[in-house]
Figure (cartoon, rainbow, N blue to C red):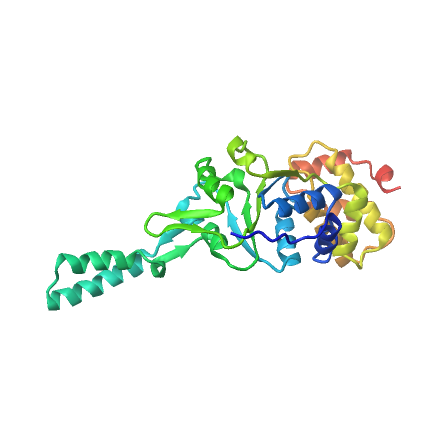
Length: 302
């Protein structure tokens, strides 16, 4: 297995990610660079909607790599994560062989040959982990929301993340021809194992500082008035200071910016417009009611 670094420096990471629509902080750019240089997986934790998944897509774009995604959920297992056999195709092959043998007479050697034939690469269905291992071209493997999966799935990942190889009992060990760039994301709804953490570099992504969030809004919604964008970012920051069931994510800040643009807002934010569009960024009625009652719009918008 060969490992060829994708980025030349931290600044190179920052510039190439920005070219693909991702504005990285110093911490993000540095950790991505180190993960690339060391050939180690990158574990990214933080609240939902702060750009964890988007980082993987940006790295794939910046490196001309294929993004292979394993979306985790409760009950995801080896067959959905790693590989499974195409049982329907195997059965057709067995049926065809059986008909042939019935016509000509079968012996034990013939059936042994059939059994060996149906456990070949032709009948193997590669799932995301095996797909990323077998790819010969640059690949970014995203293992998304790992904390939603059962803890048993972490044991399956240890071989993949330690040696970048997969063992298929019928075929042997399949080793990666090149080291994929691996990103694991977690919203920290459960604690991940220490064995998994030891194999990764760690990065925590929180809500960005106001200056960086303004840049993100300017990049993604360039037609939005600058003064309006600044007021919007201050407003979202004030909402995040409140005791909400779900604080607004960066993605929801962008959605709100696009909403205001589509409604023709410009210059100073109109308090009535803010109240009527709170549902774009707040997704629970009690949060909307709390914000409408407690948010001091005069102080936030001035």
